Length: 359
Image (cartoon, rainbow, N blue to C red; front, side):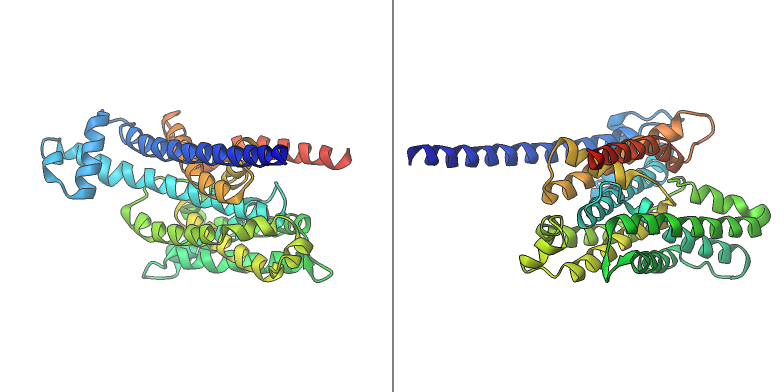
């Protein structure tokens, strides 16, 4: 009897240690994101110290004029109106795409699932491209990009899920294959619109390649509440993701309506993706790489995976954007940079998964 009590105590102490470790990591990721935001505000052609950057950010956010009063007005303008919106956009997009990828991987039970491979990102991009094209040639008042991205992201999801249904249920491998097919078709549609755009094609091309350049506070005000609300909904119901990860049969046996919940989380993740794509263009593989890194090295529980993916995704995309804009005299779109890094990682996961299946 004493042996079993010691065993229970060991399990309990192990769980407590794991909780403390995860809380520590969440704190580290949160602090590192704040530090990276401040440091990134100092990077660029104008020489701005880190103390000046933090004084500008804190002073403007809290309305403390005394912190900003002794700093050159040009520096204040550069940090607050030029650099900070871009940095915050990177943090928002990185967090949103990473959480979206974490949810897709969990509900489909497939490490290769993410907004990019499923086709939702391309669908949102196609909708946004239509809005940009109409703004260039056919309408006098600018059409908002976000509603077009939402509509086409959900339409793409609807088409992909209907194509991938096998025997009335959705197959995860078929979802990815269907997503790749639909992405190819939509990519061709984007190329067609680029051709029709003629000399104005640059407005579409740079956006499609994924860029955080020239982001403004308007983008932050629109996207931040959406991303916070959608991630909060996921976190409030995150235990359902753990149950769904067990598979359809187990989930139904435990009293969870698998098909209903699957549609719910796919719609939420698609809206999250569309929000990100509408302000940054297509930034691939963040949703694939970040959740996989968390699951592989830290935790497989979705409560930890979702929250840590949000924080780590924000960190990674802000750093990637800094490298993309500072590594060359010509700015490299961050979407190109993430694809160059994420593509090989995708192949690694695919090969590893294939070997695991064949053993």
